[in-house]
Image 1 (cartoon, rainbow, N blue to C red):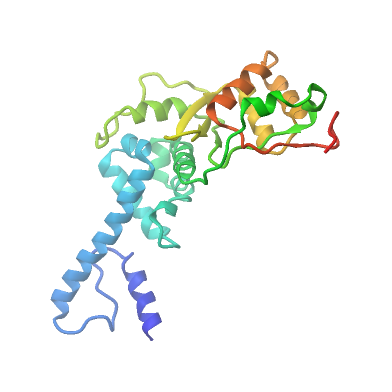
Image 2: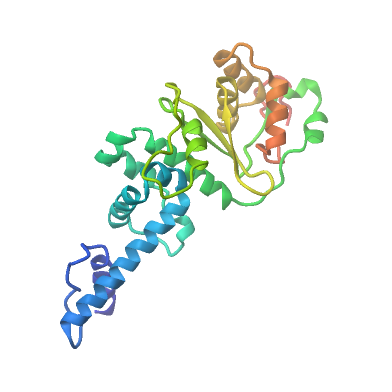
Length: 271
């Protein structure tokens, strides 16, 4: 009975603010108890909505405080936490936003922006691990490079938006102080999509806009492709792709983990 009462209370905390407490929970003055329960319910919703605001500051800046609170409260009621860790709460918020008619009407880019912010949040809490050193890469015999298989660092993420310039929007919103009712959008928004690399090489999480060649190259690497295949995909997306420059940038940003392997099916792929 205690377990069922706890479950009933948990469900009731997600009800409308003015809904009465569940039966069997109140002893004594029912009116005063209902008032106290309403306060407790408000505190639960508010604390979880505030946690979402910390995880999605750019989304909040664009929506404005009032609109974001409405959106966040609706999410909290629809998708309450499944584990007692605030840092793990909000992973499906982008999908919820995508199904929210009012948010999509006003800001159709919002789900992709939220995915970028969750990638940054996720990268912040990702495991620490050594990054690939340039010396390690330079010590590999040239004949084995086509078969080289790199792996993304645990704190590296790729976020792509086919339709929306999420890096441009994120950068503008991040430079805007929170609380404004909208107004965080840049004056001119590109009409094409953007891809973003999220890394945490040392210290803070950073985001970098990628060009089509870098997007194809890192996407192929993330999918497990050897260097020769990743290069071919990058050249197909951007004929002028410069592998040396892309690798140098990736090493500087801490994109790759320290461990490398070789694809035996590729040229020079002897394990």
